[in-house]
Image (cartoon, rainbow, N blue to C red; front, side, top):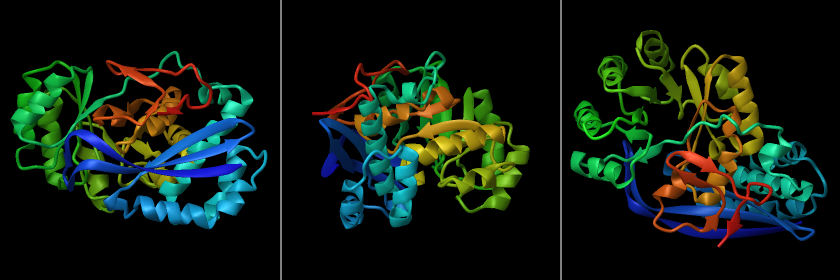
Length: 336
């Protein structure tokens, strides 16, 4: 098996701002695995919050190139278990590798990933579209630029209620709020009352990740469901989130790929937590991998490729929130 690493700079349509940073370009790593005439691709993007960069991911994968390339016909689960000890400190690199291996494995089996997993796509949820923090006028303009059934609105400013109040005047769409750790306990509980009246479905990660006492307080008193993001990184975190959140947002780059992501979703379901998968402004490579998890999800945020000025691959397409799969097997991705 041959390992190929490609580095990209994904340019965004608009400056993307959340409570802790703004970006115009998203560095991304594409991992490709080739064997027996088949090819599989995976992706992971850099992220300052998680202290990960593309050069570091590439270095970490190069260190174990021989182990990767000597892999034969192992299942994705066995491959992940073998590689995890070497990349336990770089889950982003492990994610890109795991995606690529799952893609390759399914293509060799002649199936799409959701078919290999025996998932039915009949009741897939719609994806939201993210409106990053900007002036109220710019946020309204972004929303009007792409009419959508569900908007995820980034907050964490002093004008949060005013922002949502104004956005509500321009659409009947469902709103989801992501404060990216930018609120206090009292702000969250109080804001939830107003935001519920404004048609907000849930709040995502309002408090800092390690504020478990605060999470518990919000969980008890918020009139809106609370979904964990920064507080739910790896598999062990799902159980910690129980009775502190109403659901979990599984990010594949944070947990190490599709293989552990599927386990996290199943654990969340057993605990009665709502399930969600989110993206990190990936190209269609990463977004197409997420698409195959849809049958197991209550919510999904997989709009990353829609935020790009220019994509680097073809795969799933999205029409007014609905995901359409590629005709190709695996994740259905083809690099341009």
